[in-house]
Image (cartoon, rainbow, N blue to C red; front, top):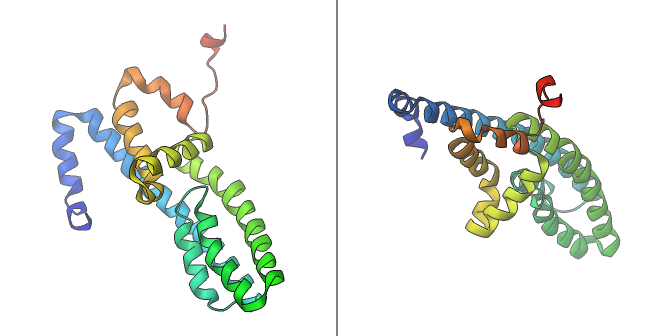
Length: 192
């Protein structure tokens, strides 16, 4: 896929000659996917640094490894933090007992609730144009269809479906108002 991506612009230019709306939709999808990855990477880095620092302060073994796991699982919307929490919590239980495990769970939960449940969905939604509800439904649907890989690819695949089914068709663009993180303001002519 990486090697094929080098020729994507030429292929997209060829598609634009025959189907300009499709080429435009695919360009929007590619830009949205890049923005999603950039925002998720930034928030993943923030979460990883904070989680790693907390684990190091608590004396949990291998804090850098668990910070890396927190960074990677941050790409999975809504449930990624739970997947990144289990190994360090179990290690804290084995190394420091129940109290240390509970401290790890409470600290991880507080950090991840604020960053991944409050801040990140708003920034991701605004950057890619998907509502928080649609993001959650995408996670459920794509995980059901593709399993764990679907959880990782939920947002890019949803952006692709939106680009090919909604953005490419002028008659279906009204659905954007239902999927967008920032619903449009009603126009005066529609309100009267």
